[in-house]
Length: 158
Image 1 (spheres, rainbow, N blue to C red):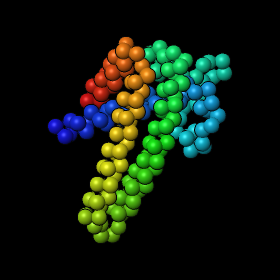
Image 2 (tube, rainbow, N blue to C red):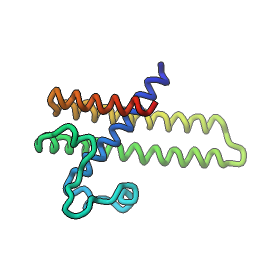
Image 3 (cartoon, helix red, strand yellow):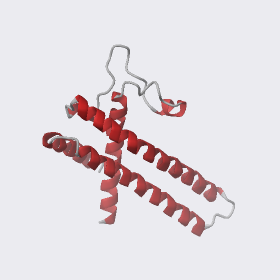
Image 4 (cartoon, rainbow, N blue to C red):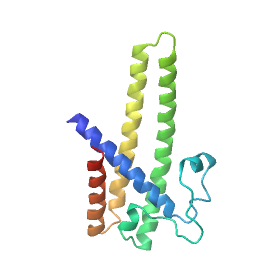
């Protein structure tokens, strides 16, 4: 049961990351304000003359007001997520260092693994909070579509 819950949360997290990418791509100023490290990780902007965006949010047929609200919600959660991602990455690097030691300490590595799991849980919680806050700005049909997209994504990850 716990494994299934973790799997479902992880799948939802991946779906939200996918969805969040389309929110950012829809922002007109998104590509201009990227930091160098983020540019390397994200796809290039669309060719000139082609509107940015696409992805799952386009299928929801959001109004301009809804798009703004979703972008604001995502922006708030993006900073929280970035802090947790950085902490998680540092924790993983530290665990790798522990593993490379001449005589690795199993207890120290176990504690570090627990820290990583706490950070991953925090990431999933942030994504879940963003998902439910975003649902509040959608009409019932859009909520149904969003839930359907998330469900399909979760089932494909099995």
